[in-house]
Structures are given as C-alpha cells and as structure tokens.
Length: 635
Ligand code: COA
Ligand code: AMP
Image (cartoon, rainbow, N blue to C red):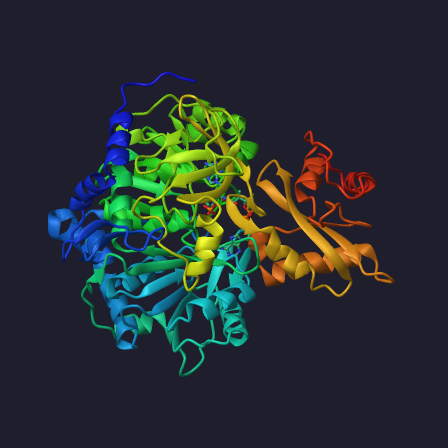
C-alpha cells in the first residue's frame, strides 16, 4: 500500500450516500436542460428506479452545441488516429456539431424519428461516433454492434432492436487482413426476420461495397444532399441507446441507457474520477462497440468538453509497441484508459520499455485500467515504466461507469494491488452470502449494490423487464446482483475475484460460454459439451471447449475439433477467440447433473481445487486432466 495526499473522497462519498437526491440534483445543474426535472429520484416503480423524471434535454446538444455556444467551438473535440491506415484527422467542436447535424438530417429525411432504433455496425472510424451522436440529436435510439461479431449475432440484434436503419461501412481493418463488412451485413439482414427500411454505407478506400438499389445509400452522397437537423428535446428517462452484452445464454441482453441520468453521471466522472479538466485530452483505447467506447470514447469526454481520441489500431504491431506512446505524445493526452491485456501485449514485446523512452509522455497524469482485474505484474510494470499512478477500476456494461475506483479527481487514496479500490460516490456496495446476509470484512461472497443504483446505470433491459428482474434484482431483495464474487476489506477496499455465472473475459471482452456451448451442441457429432475459460498470459482468459461425441461417431476427433472451432467463429465471430477444444469421454457432473466447469478450469490452470462433495464420478476428473495434458495444460 503506497501513501497518498489528502483526499476529499470520504466526505463526497458520505454526501452521496446520505442524501442521493440532493447530491445528484446538484451535480445535474452542470447539464443543460430544456425542462427541469420534477423529481430527482423517482421510486414509484421500485425496484425499478428512474432519475430526473419530467426533465427534458438533448444529449447531443450537451456533448457538442453547448460547448460551441460557450466558446469552445475551435477546440478539438475528436481526434481520429488510424494506425492501420496511417491517417490522422481532427474535428473541432463546431465541425463535429455541423457534421453530426447533417447526418441527423440524413436519418430524419428518411423517416427516422424520436424513439426509432438505428443499428450501427462500424469499425473504429469517426463516422461511428458521428452516427451515434446524430441519433442522439433526433432522439433515435442507437445500438452499436461490435465489428468482431459475426452475421448471426448481428441478425439476433436486428430482430431484437427492430431498427429502421442500419449504418455500416465497407470494411474494418485488422492487422494483416481487411474485414469486408457488407457481406456480413447482407447475410445478417437475410437471416433476420425484421427488415430495416434503409442502410447507409461508408465506402472506405480499401474495399468498395456493392449497394443494393432501393435499400442502401452511400454515406458521402447522402451527407452531401442533407440539411442540418436541430436537437430534439427528449425526456430524461427516454432511451439514448441499447447495448447488447453477453448473458448466460446465447440470447444477449439489451442494456438500455437513458438520456438524463447518463449525461449527469458521465459528465461528473470526468473531473471527479479521472481528474481531467475541460479542454484536456482523454483517451480510452477501446472500441465504440463496447461500453467503454460508448461512455469514454464518445459521451463522457464530449459532455465534459474534453478532446477525445478515437484510435483505430492495436497496442502492438501497428506498427510496434510504441503506438500508444506516439498517440499520447502527439495529442498531449492527460489520461489513458485501456484494458490490462493491452499492457500485457506491450510488455511482452517491449519488456524494458525501450519504446516508451522514444516519446515525451510528460502530459500523461494517470493510467486507468478496466475490463478485467489488473494483475500485480502488469500494475508494477506500468507504474515502473510510466512513473504515474496506475488505477484499476471495476465496472460493467450494465452500470455504464465505474462501481469501484480510486477517484483521482477527488485526490487519490493509497493504491492496493489487486483491488479497484473503493466504492465510487453513489454506490453502496456490500458482500452478501447466499442467504443475502452481509458477510464480515474480508470474507468472500457476491458483490451487490444496494438499490437505487446511481444515475447513468441501466434502468432496464430492452423489451425484457422480467429478465431484468430475474437476472439482477430477484436473488437479493433491494440489491443489484453484480454477478461478480469478491471481498471488501476492513479499509473498504473491494477485491473482485470472479464471475458467479458462466461469463468469461477474453482480452477485456465479455463473452458467454453458454452461447458457445449452444453453437457446439449444433455439431452433428457432438452429444454433449461444455466451455470454460482457461488462464492465458496475454488475454487473461481464453475459452476451451470439451466435446463428448455421439455413440458410433466415426469422424476423426481433430476434424470435429476443427469444425467446432470454425462454427464458433462463423456464428459468434472472431472476437470469441475460440481456438481450442478437446474430445473427452464424459463430462464431470454433480449428482444433480450440473457440469463442473469451475473444476475443469482449475485443472486446466493448475490451480488448487477441492473434490466437489456432490460429484457423480471422480474418475472423470482424471480423464479430463489426462486429455488436457495432451495439449500442454496446465501450462
Ligand atoms: N472487427 C473484426 N474482427 C475483429 C475486430 C473487429 N472490430 N476486433 C477484433 N477482431 C478479431 C481479431 O482480428 C482476432 O482475429 P484472429 O482470431 O483472426 O486473430 C479476434 O477478433 C480476436 O481479437 P482480440 O481478442 O482482440 O485479439 P487480438 O489478437 O486481435 O489482439 C490485444 C489482442 C490484446 C492486442 C487486443 O485484444 C487489444 O488491443 N485489447 C485492448 C483492450 C480492449 O480493447 N478492451 C476492450 C474493453 S476496454
Ligand atoms: P463488461 O460488461 O464487458 O464491461 O464486463 C464486466 C465484467 O468484467 C465485470 O462483471 C467483471 O467480471 C469484469 N471486470 C471489469 N472490470 C474489472 C476490474 N477492474 N477488476 C475485475 N474484474 C473486472
């Protein structure tokens, strides 16, 4: 534990806990409202709470126009840095507002109005952020789908969100390969039952997409013929976006974000959690397809008047492990936010930090990490090489911003390795045992947050209120179940240990093992299967499949494994990083038939495990260990 200067964290935390309405009501004054709220916190439909009911605002106005009106028009709002195409482009707040207003015109003139959904399936180009903000401008609800998902996943989202329009691009660029998006989009539309009225396609020079007459329009042509649209006021409680995230089954959860609470909370986080002032550059090295991208590439930095960096590239290989340092030095980045896996990749290729010394990084104040636990090796390497505080913070797609963090803007508390520090103001976090009783300090249990959650968190799941209740609110009455297990120590520091469900974290990406099992079960030779996440030096975890074949199957094992791997890539997408599977005789189960995925994971990782008391046949675990040893596990 290292020392820290005086922090105002504790009084601010207490103020938010003792009187949330007063606290968030005051914070909300920083947002521009076209109609003031009637109630800060509306508990009339508890346990579903709403923030700022009756209030009206426009999120795009707050992110762009407000800054132009307040004299920041010439400041860089968004810097696009593409390491894969060697392109840099900066948009001032005025330019970004004008382009967004025109693209809002493209949508509105084709019939997209308040409340309509628009799917955005795009690579990391500024047009992705422009499309998001254009939706916000006219009150349409965007749903961004990550480019690494396959056509089938896109089709599932099209059917759930029923969009009027889909915005896409001709291609994305991954190191060593160009990913043509249009064939994936066409396939998804043909798989889906719901059909969009139109699609807008951004043609990139690397691949030209063929456009379907009557349905597809070219981005540039449409923009050239559009008239600028003004901001449409929406209710604070109206949805701003839907972001699908992995659940325990193949059916993703549509996390809904509202307009009012989101603008209030996210704007507050920039100064108070990240310690950046308006006008300074902030960089979240993530993707707009993830929640980090929504909150910290697009909305929060713009709401707070910061310059945001939209980076198309990887931490290594584009072209070298100095890519991050180049971007920081060229843009005077004050805070970098990324996933620990990116640092593990850099550290692996540049262990001595030679590339770090090539650049002037004096602008950089803090490194924030999230998406998975920051392992001590990565923490110390980054602290050592950068010489700045490295701050682990914990959050989820559902929460939209961090649950636990060391709030740099309030004055750092001491950093404890392995911990994302303490509950952020607005969060009342507790560790509960299976009966919902509070566990003593230092004891493991489920991390749960007392309701109501602060503004900016999800008010509901799209078209799935009951699933919202069943998944998050039912088990512990009056609490949000985070589905993360952990402990809180006697200094109130939180330690997040593992998921309590079947979700795994691969390179900071959240994936459902259940969804992969559903795909594998469709292989004609597979009678039964299980997927678990096994430890990986670079990605934290990677999925591993266990396949039990149907009796009498004559196909060769390695052929089945290769087909199974291809099926997951084809149906879920390359992002699943599903590359390993093993054919086994049987799966270990409890006497009630529950597959012991956790025990299989421990065997693969070589970590200590206890023989489950309820195991059906312990010999099966020896068979699993034997099968794993044939492919070099534990490593
Ligand atoms: N479109 C199409 N394919 C994509 C894609 C996209 N937007 N993003 C990733 N993929 C593909 C990759 O090319 C890779 O394909 P491959 O199996 O053919 O190699 C696959 O999906 C897996 O991607 P990923 O797990 O990201 O691995 P990687 O080897 O490409 O990169 C890291 C590894 C660590 C460098 C990378 O994950 C990274 O930069 N992570 C940063 C953290 C981050 O973005 N976290 C998000 C939450 S904060
Ligand atoms: P996502 O919804 O993709 O942001 O993934 C959320 C999950 O990632 C959480 O429930 C955690 O399991 C994990 N996670 C995110 N940040 C951290 C962190 N700082 N420490 C430990 N786990 C984390």
